[in-house]
Image 1 (spheres, rainbow, N blue to C red):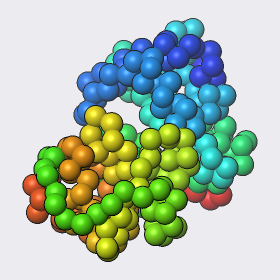
Image 2: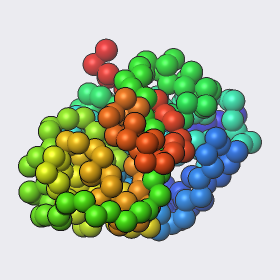
Image 3: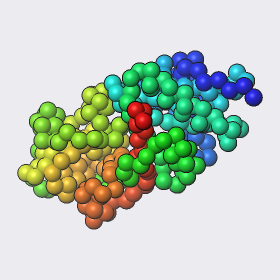
Length: 257
């Protein structure tokens, strides 16, 4: 078997979307990625297509690893192998290839998330030197009317109340800078940045979570991606009738070691 990692640019967006979907067939949480969705992801999450890799086996694409890069930080935005090529070292070869690309770009730290039940991938990441930083959860909260005191404000006004802290890549400042639909909301005891799409999506917050969450659910069902499991908002979400749909480990690889 001849295995060769090549640049993601060797395939079109549509071809990569098809490969992405095929590579997640039978996964803990199957993913259906179409061309528009992948184009959106690579723009908003800053995928580096030159550094991202497609694995070719005997000239046929059988896996992919998406690498997003922002200065000295990088993030694995999806890695997978088609069913017929699994358990043959393709995933490890892809990860090592994007690590080399990251080093060449001056990246110092690489982040990723892995679903708790995906023990095979977790073992691979540990083998490669990743360590668990924290556990994070995906939450949903049903919509409800809210009559408490809150008001929408310019994003900059809400952002000024938020501390400078590490957020998961999908909710980090670099990602929000790529959005054109971020909104700000404040209460007497906190502030939140959010987007209203098919749901009210919490991006970042600070302060008392209960008034903020009650306000957000007036915009529709609330969705929070990768909230730290020990975040104070988790208990409030539980009390308000929210539920966890996915649990993940957030992991970090220090390329300097």
